[in-house]
Image: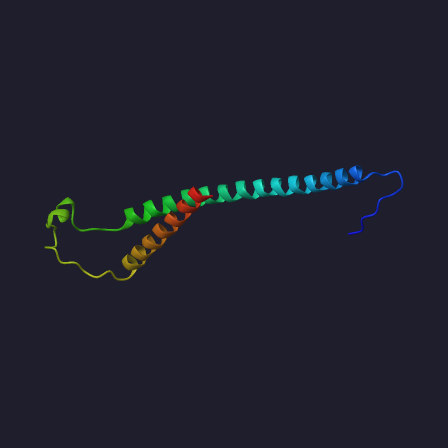
Length: 112
């Protein structure tokens, strides 16, 4: 950067012009930061809402043969558990993935 003082120009005017251009740069950088922050926050909130709906749907689609009595050792199938196969296993795995993503997005919303 070339720094030269012309005749009749004081060092104070040179410094004030440099500070003004630096202030303009910082102002633009700060406004871009705020814009990016608002966009990121909006994207996180919308994705949290969509993941919440997906998680509710995935949990409600899972089938259980037993009712409330299963919590106390009862159940219609005598306590025998069958392994998950096919679409039931895919839905179970998708529920876990959606729950982990929902947790991560919720944590990001709180931190940002």
